[in-house]
Image 1 (cartoon, rainbow, N blue to C red):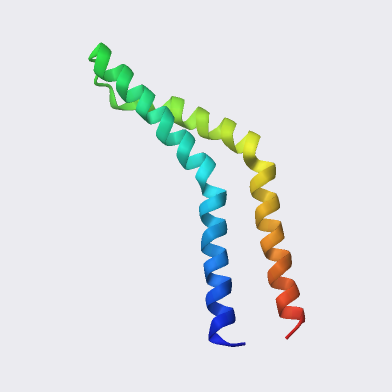
Image 2 (cartoon, rainbow, N blue to C red; image 1 turned 180 degrees about the vertical axis):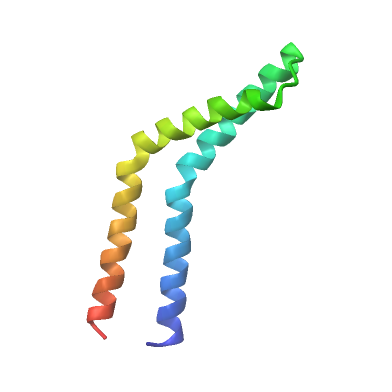
Length: 87
């Protein structure tokens, strides 16, 4: 196994991690922004107010995008196993 193969696998793994985590991170960021705008307009400075909606939004996102995430990770795992079997 050469250094080029290892760097290609590492690069592919990092890209897949970004792809898999992107939906959850984007939803959490958007919900946090909406809640912070709501807090700024109503002048409610409760720290726990943003926790429950973010948690619910992340849970719903995982339910909706879970199949997509699992498929990406399974494809990568199969690719790695194929590479191992070719050694």
